Length: 195
Image (tube, rainbow, N blue to C red; front, side, top):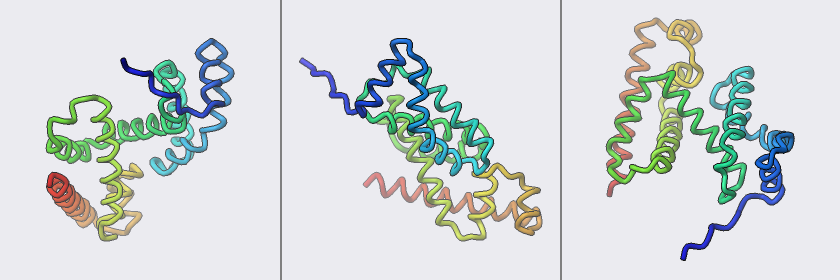
């Protein structure tokens, strides 16, 4: 017989969640006050724009509120809300940057049939996104700056070329070359991961 998994959620958070689920919606405000800094700091790293980060933080808590009944207390509430924020950041990047989406798909396709469950694939997406960000940080500054500005700060090529004082063709070739390096690195990481 399967035993129910233990509740590992913080008791104060769990009590709050139960109140909300019983209809005391004001109690959700306690959770927001406790964890909005965590979500907001994630949003600031991702969007580098206060207004967008604030809107994003509200969206994440709205999603958490709507999905609260699915939270079973088998993780800390902070872990759960953090994963909602991460998945939402990834979703937005993929929507806004289909070019990155294409390279992500290449990585996901090579990871094999084990990624069939939704939980596994969303975890994999998260890891892939984090991997790409950390690889971008390792690029030579020549390529890193334009790629970061374009993909992580949503700047247009025109703004970047003015900002970095680069000719448009030079900028495009830097971004193209940077993406090529990232693809090579991802491919290598994938191959070594299979050993």
